[in-house]
Length: 178
Image (cartoon, rainbow, N blue to C red; front, side, top):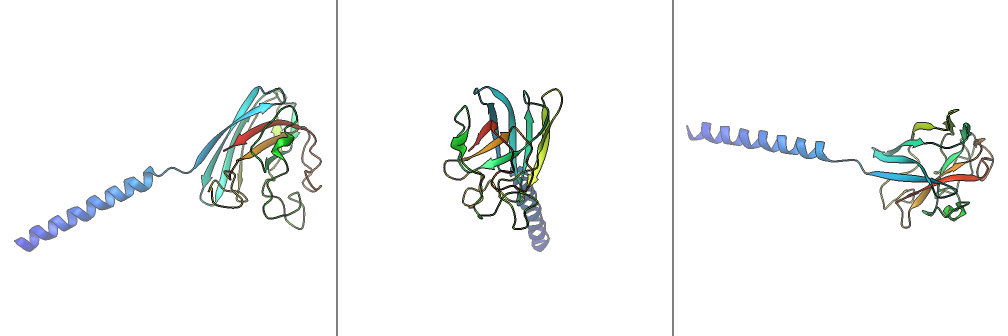
């Protein structure tokens, strides 16, 4: 009888610990960052939400008040968005010292992203996923490095090959990532 009671208690403990472990695993949230995007006047024109999903970062962007058409969009190395030109964000995030563009045979910057398509109404909603960056703070390709990084939207489309920024023109919108 004692063995039976002991076996029942042991089984109950194992089942209970399995339930707690499963709940803890389900309760773990992926790192996520919300980014406010401003125009050259400093007005908010949208947001981006960055979420770590395994070894990739997913970005959901929702912006308005932009000119219709394709716009280059990149992660930049410094977390500053000083108006009116956002040059304080400096160059593209590029810890691996690659050249620019998806079509570059030598590889591309960690900060390179596909063009953002803006509708006739000046609005865009898009989701991009990249494994070239992370939200883990200790990594060289982290968007959350000391001082942060920036998300820049350019006036023109990225041609995916011209170094250093794909002939994507002026910086027209910016969001600090930290």
